Length: 464
Ligand SMILES: Nc1ncnc2c1ncn2[C@@H]1O[C@H](COP(=O)(O)OP(=O)(O)O)[C@@H](O)[C@H]1O
Ligand SMILES: [Mg+2]
Image (cartoon, rainbow, N blue to C red; front, side, top):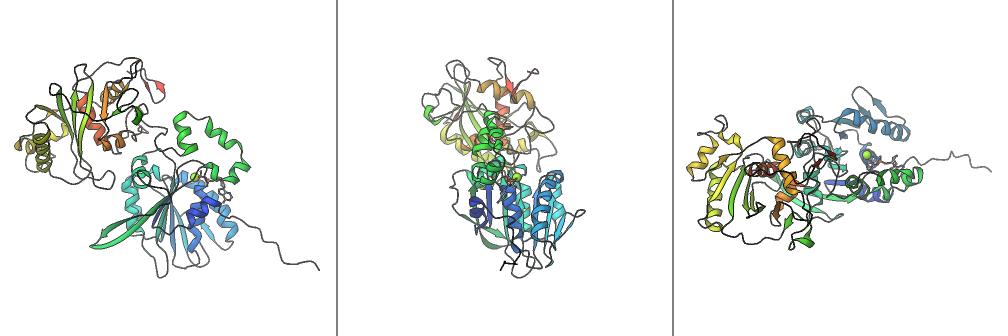
């Protein structure tokens, strides 16, 4: 007898890496870090996990609504065939399942868009392409990740490639100094109550997406012909190189820390007493402040030899020190380490603004503590070009600017700056650019001319 049971077609099943990602118990998980690994598919599938619970609410967020429409199209195929009773409302961008559960699609094009989610709560929150978001946008959604009823699991998931405006904080939160697949737990206090929050990074590249490799063998070839930086980032998930990186010429080459050739980062040494010393400063309260100490050798080469960076454990979040406290700390450091040598101060010109201080201007508060600064030159593009000029290597591999390897925050933040989308010659100033700003103020005190033609953003720039 023939078997009359209709043959069931498997619509979607996770591939090995997707399985690993989807089986993780942590509160937060980041998946991917390279192109084509099956990231978006995994997020869409993960969102379905609790749709049998009537009160379940999930949201999948992309930076813009047009980008979101790619996910929506894929969801029409996946959800539409797996859940024939589910209905998609294209005006509100929400799927409603038979149980009453809902999966929303949303965007956060501008930072203020996060207010759209005020008062809403979601059991599952997913960010697709997390490096397109700022830390403020992502962390705001923590407060929206609350159970919508009894019996739901509350958690957040995200995917991304290296690069983009959020590269720096995503790298710091999930990648730097952390092992993939390893659970990291932090204690957070919300309304006086302590919670343990766990997070993990699960890497995947296109080589983990066997289905794509089979269906579209040219996909890898397309990634392989990208410019070197982009190729490393998108094909291999290299977080130290990505497209749009403003200072892609910056080299941190530990093998050459002592020989000082073909590297900008070098081993610390005692600064000779005869070298001129500078202190440059970018003020921040809710955002980090940056103090840098620079020395200039007899050839005019500059060395960042110490820094004080006012950042909490959270990226781009300031320690909220009053100016007088920063001034006292500077005084303490200089008393101990500069021992009577003169240090020329240069600072963000906005600290002279009448409107910024509470009790006089911010500069007044420093001067009251005996810490003096000259007004820095904040001409943005000229300052940026000074970094490019100084980073150029001469024929023997010596640049005009070095950074001591202990100045970790400077190295971290400088290498992750990207170009502004609108003002394409300039740095996107919504990133963690405080060390970069302080560096500009200092370099503008000793501007130099370029050694050779400068290439910016992949092309020769006729403006400079
Ligand atoms: N488990 C799976 N089953 C079938 N196709 C898959 C699966 N995972 C990924 N794919 C397909 O691989 C391609 C790339 O996946 P996608 O999730 O868009 O990658 P990413 O977001 O990492 O760039 C898509 O065409 C997707 O449909
Ligand atoms: Mg994707």
